[in-house]
Structure formats: structure tokens, C-alpha cells
Image (cartoon, rainbow, N blue to C red; front, top):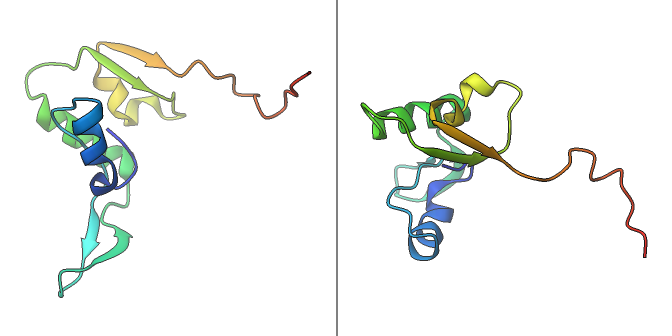
Length: 99
């Protein structure tokens, strides 16, 4: 599951991460068949949440990896049995590296 357009990450995720399905935002295609670069969804978190729920109809995903969100109930992680968040400190920009 990604907030990036699906077409940009699908091949990498399937080839290198061995993903079975890739859920991401969809881009608008104009009448001539060209991608405009505009995203179809207005609420990306809700759209991804609905797609994950439809993919795992009667079961819950066993593991979700992602960033904790302010509205945690609105992300796909709320559907997962176990959630693992990134191990990066939120104030990493304030810290200076000492050599």
C-alpha cells in the first residue's frame, strides 16, 4: 500500500519485494489515453483503506508496515493485526551529527 501512484511502484514491488498485489493512488487518464498526472482520489487514506478492506474480505492482514498517522483509524494500518512503525525519531531534523 502506497500513497504514490500505483503505476510508479507496481513493477518494483512485484519484481523485487515479491508483492502479490499493489495498492496505490490511481492517475487520471484523458480521452486520448494519456496520463494527466492528476490523482483520481481526493481522500487517499480512505481510498486505500477501502481497497485493503476489499482485498482482505473476511480476514485481517497479519502485518502492516508504515508511518503512524495523526488519524490512525483512517489508514490501512487500522485493519492489520500487528502494526510496525518506522524506527526513525520524529526530531531527526533537529539532531546534528557529531564527527
